[in-house]
Image 1 (cartoon, rainbow, N blue to C red):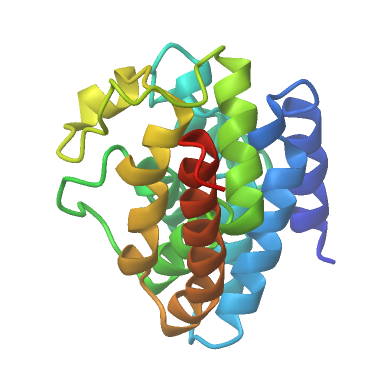
Image 2: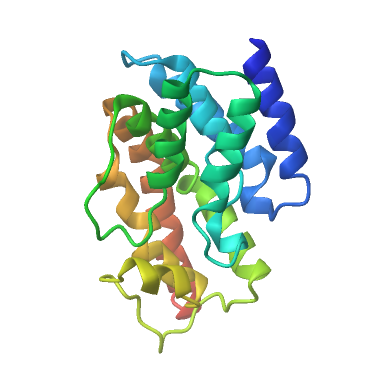
Length: 215
């Protein structure tokens, strides 16, 4: 492991030591592993991929009153302390600025193969068994209901509506998680998403059947 990767891991662990369970160091570690797996199939700059994966959630805006500038600023300051090339720092920061879902109803402002890899890696951790666990962990963290049949999913949310949403956790499956499979960027990401999506779909079906007393 290079010094810069070792230093980045240490920095991220320190910053996220008290983070919510779905956005903690272990989330970062899983995304890092996903990114390495996808990167094996792509012609990319691996250092940029690793740094962006490790720093992508260094200060998630939903834990900073919606401020989307905190994370990129923290990442930039840390990377500059490591004497990295400006081009690498700029690339990593652009990935962090553009990676999140934010409702999914907007055009990409930035893209690169490294961005595609890290975004896919992050999205993989939002679906499947881990994705289910993270969704309910965050819902509990925010004291949201599991489900309320009277509150319908909003499938056409703007970025601001998505950020301010307080809907039940099950709505999040329809508003984001079940949509991610078809939004993957890379062939490897799409392949990995298929199985996780299928598992999540079965869970959703089972949940509603149990909720309605059918099973």
